Image (cartoon, rainbow, N blue to C red; front, side, top):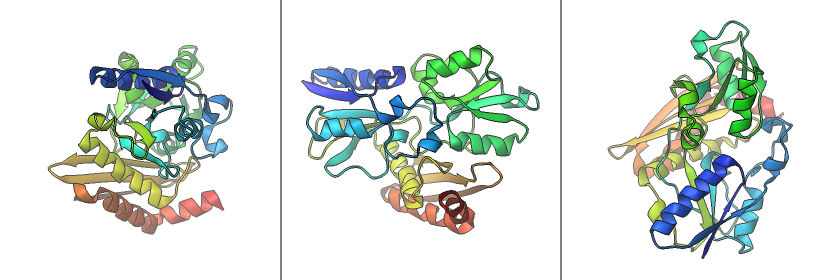
Length: 295
């Protein structure tokens, strides 16, 4: 029987059960092992202030390495660009909607000074540039917790990943989906990562080649920039007719500066195209933003 390691949140379990269902349909018996991560234990501090890479993956990867699990299912945006020795990104299934969504009211319908909640420094920085009048405040917790806080009137609107809302059946709560040109998504947003020990070949049938290529390009941007939770970085790649196109941003946390750039190249050179785009961002001003954050 295959053991699937997963976080215990509603969304994480939906993702793990979806993978389990695909593997069961292919004739493999599965069970899910819930693993509590550092990120699950820290609920009262904004993620950017915690600043630990692998916040939602470290304990799960330990379960893989010591043999307690055969595979792990992550939200790909939680997976660090460098994996522990002995582990690989074995499959990336077809991506759900990678864009960001507004729940509550459309941005244009919100009054001056509206209080908008987000757990993401990336969303907050771009939102501050779009609407400097907003009060942008941190909102932590699982999706249902954040939606409850909105419904209680603690916020006028909240920003969330469209994928999570759609997967959990809350797509009707979306007031507006923001185009990537306006709100560049997180690296890997909307995609699942299936991580295994090197040499384990039981999940290859779940891989979607175009999605895998797109997220490799996005992860190459992030890897080349060396960014973590403290820097607002976004990247969004699409694949068509054998070519990959990437849009990426690096923003000052206060939203006063957002550096944007795009690149395109052959799909077979997705990682190289991502790295080239990162170099372009650094030249355009991203280096100064990164140095200011980490100094």
